Amino acid sequence: MKVAWTHRARARLRQIHRHIANDQPANADRVVDRLTRRVEQLIEHPHSGRVVEGFLQGDLRELIEAPYRIIYLVGRDRIDILTVRDTRRVLPRRLDEW
Image 1 (cartoon, helix red, strand yellow):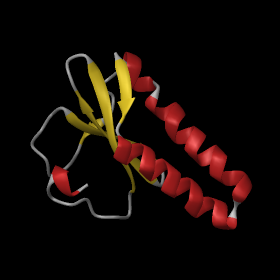
Image 2: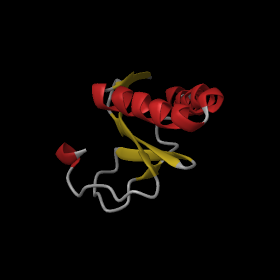
Image 3: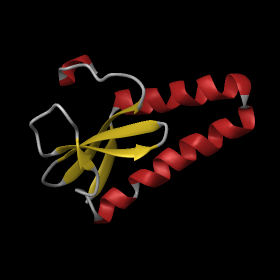
Image 4: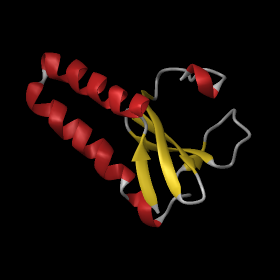
């Protein structure tokens, strides 16, 4: 299975990196690396994440890599990483608001 990062998800990784780098430059690369490595499990196990609570779509899932949640959509031929969000933030109710 192929994994594709959306523009929004890539932008979120850059934001996370910048935010961490303000106080801990050495740690910023490690956090982003940890997040991107976590996604690699989806190549072999696309349904390994849990269904996103509050959404009735079984193909909308998330991996938790504290303190972040990696939200993705399982398609027939690929997995789209939709966004990376802090677990303490409430998700908007609609996908198009992410």
